[in-house]
Amino acid sequence: MKITIINGQNHKGSTYNIGKLLIDSISCEKEISEFFLPKDLNYFCAGCYTCIEDETKCPYYKEKNAIMQKIEQSDLLLFTTPNYCMAPSAPMKAFIDLTFTYWISHKPRKCMFNKKAVIISTTAGAGAKKAIKPVKRTLFYWGIPWIKCYGISVQAMNWNGVSEKKKVRIEKDMKKLAKTLSKCKTPSVSLNTKFMFHIMAKMQKSNFGSSPTEKKYWEDRGWLGKERPWKQ
Image (tube, rainbow, N blue to C red; front, side, top):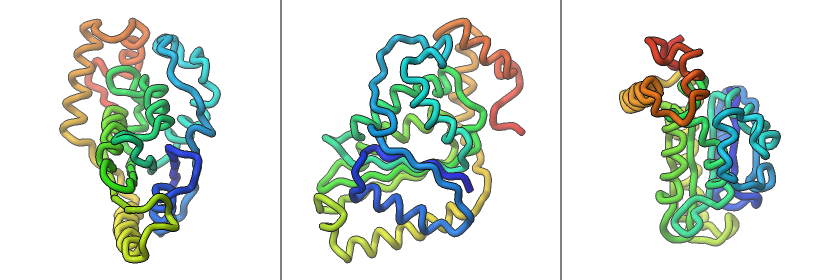
C-alpha cells in the first residue's frame, strides 16, 4: 500500500503521534511518503490564476508538484492538522488553496476517484471537528470517495501531557481504523460525488467553467460525454 502523509505542522505533537499510531498499525506492506507543512511548501496562493491555463506556470509549482505527484501515486492519504482557532493550521489551509485546480469544478484527476483518505485533528479543548471540516470538504471535491475523520480533545498541550488513559483509548481507535484500512479494497464512488461530477460536467459543457482550457481538459478525457473517471 502506497501512503502519503501531509502533516499540517512541522513539530511532532499530539496530532502527528496519533497519525503515526495509525500508520504503524496498518498490517499490510507499506511504502510511505511524508511531508510537513510549512517546511515542504511554505507559500500562500497568490491568486494569479496562471495554474488554470498551465499548472507548471505556478510560481510554487516545483514544491507543490513534488507533493502532488506522491499523492496521485498513493492508495491512502493521511492528513493531520491540529486545531488552530477552530480551523486547520494556516499551512494546511495554504496547501488547500494551492491545489484548488484538483477540484471537480476545475481539473479533477482520474486517480483520485479510487483513493482512501483519513483526516486527524486534535485540540486541547474544543474545535477538532471544525479543523477537520475544510480538509474533508477539499478531499470530497478532489473526488476521493472514502474519507474517515478522527477528531479528539487530548486535554493537553503536547503528546507527553496526554493521560495514559486517553492514549490507551486513542491506540484502540487507531488499531480499529487500521484494520479497516488494511483491507486493500477499492472504495465505491458515492452518489453525492457522481451527482457533483455530473453538475460540473454540465457547467463545462455550457462554457461556465473557468476557461476554455478547462473545457478542453474535460473533452480530452471524454467526460463531457459518457466517460467517467471512476470507470475502469
